[in-house]
Structure formats: C-alpha cells, structure tokens
Length: 370
Image (cartoon, rainbow, N blue to C red):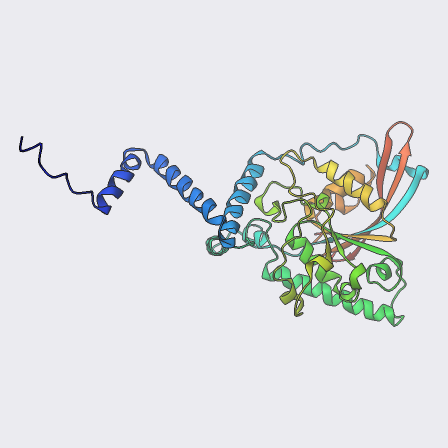
C-alpha cells in the first residue's frame, strides 16, 4: 500500500533528455549518425530560410552544390554532341546570310587559379584557402567554386583588355590607325553591334570590362544580352550558373568596384530575357551552339560580340569550320581575355538542309594559346 501512495519520480534533467534523444544516433553507425545530423541541420536551415534572407541563401547554396555535383557525375554534353557529317564548306555559294562574330574569352577564374596552375607545393594552400573562403560565403549569393568568378589575375587581365580597347576607341574616333570595320563597330565608332554573354559571372564581368568604353556611354539602349546557350560545355562545378532560373540576372556584386564607379544598375545594363536558366544534365553541346548561331544570324546588327568560354568556343570552331581547315581554333583555346573574329554564314543545302559555316578567322587580341 505504501508504494501506491508514493510520490511520482522527478522529471528528467535536460542532460538526461539530451542523452535519451541522442541514444538512437549513438547506437547506429558513424555514417548513419552523420546523415541524421545533416538531414536535421538541413531541415532547420529550411525552416530558418522562411524568416531569414541569409538562411535562404544558404539553403539555395546547398541545393546548387547538390545539383552541380549531380551534373559533375552524370553530364556528358560534349560526348552527346551531334556534329554534322556534312562538311560546312558545302554551303559555299549557297550562303544566304552572313554575320561577323567576335568571341571574347573570360579572364582567369578562381577555379583556374586553383586547379589549372602547377600542382606544386602551393596547391594545398590554394585549395584549403579557397575552401575556407567558400565556407565564409555559404550564406551569400557568392561562391568560389560554383559559377567561379574572376581571380585577381583574371581581373587584371580584364582591366588590361579594357584599357587596350578604350585606347583603340579613342584613336579610332580621332581617325588614327588602320581601317577596321569590325573593330569600329565593336568599339561603338560606327555601325550596329549586339553584345551577348554567357550566364556565368566570369564571362559577364569580362565582357563588361572589355566594352566599358561603349557601355558607359550607351544609354538605356545599350545592354548586354545574357544568353544561356553560351554557358560553358564542361561538367566541372564551376560551369554551374548561380543565375539558375529563367530570366534571372547574373549576380555581379563586385562589378561596380572593379570598374571604379559608384554603382551599377544591373537591370539597365543587362537583358536576361535569353537566360533560360540552368543547363540541364542532358544538355547537348551542339544544340546550344546551333541555338546561338541561329540567334546571332537573326540579329539586326553588323557584328555580334559574344563573351564566353574556351571549351565552348573550341567546340564551336570544330563544328562549323570546314573539315580541311587548319585554323588553330579547332585544337587550341582562346587565351584568357583573348578576342577572335570570324564570319558566320548560313545556307540551305539540298541534301543536308540548314547549315552554318565559319570563315575568315582572325586573331584580334591575344589569339589562341600556343
């Protein structure tokens, strides 16, 4: 009877409740523990993202990292390319349209700085330093690895190109130098020009640097078209765009400081209507190149400038140069911040249908790697 009237046991202490809650984790394997903790942390971050913009950036960054990792593992966009078996030279006199195109490759990126330099004693420092910077940027719309931005060397290369073209523009306006209708058009001296860029940050910033001599004075009508067809054709996570939604502007928070101006009005400077969003895992490189070629050919302009990437440019030349062409663009990359012009022709062949061909490739600045 005494037990019947005894007082209830005291409530468990907070430490005891924590021990009981963690008991299932403690009894499982290490991998299972880590997975449970990760899922719990991600769930907490998702809940916090409903109230905090910084938490929302963090949740999106984790999603982007997972998507980029899946692309790294599963993408084969270059292998899936469907190059025509018909020699582009067959267009010949059947060409009905012609457009001058100028390719501008971006400057060195942070990814290039880490992985494309020598694997010497400095590599561990470059890698771990970049990982530390990535952790700091977790809750921001920025990244070292995803949509890798310009490195300090790349920024210096972009500035050097900007100064070179600014000087060229000033000389041309004074009537000095050799006649060059393409560069007159690119620099805004005369003629009509359309400027496009990949939806990756390093290409956007390089393109703006290169043509700032005209963009700064272009008014509301002078805009850079963000074209997702120009997105790099590689599986590395640095080719994953942070502007991953349709019509989304590319984040360029450092651009104003790089250009030494007070502010940049992104909506006035960029036209994101051609940004279709993130490239799909099943993307076919040749399809994106044909999409760009068709778009460029239909622009009401004398010259189309495209800011983009080395592998994309090289694959474009492989696809549309005649089979017997010895142009180095088939095998070599355009150097960082290099400029190359060419004529793109279009025609309809009676057997092979619509075809494009590249002619008259010319190195303007930097050219192809040796």
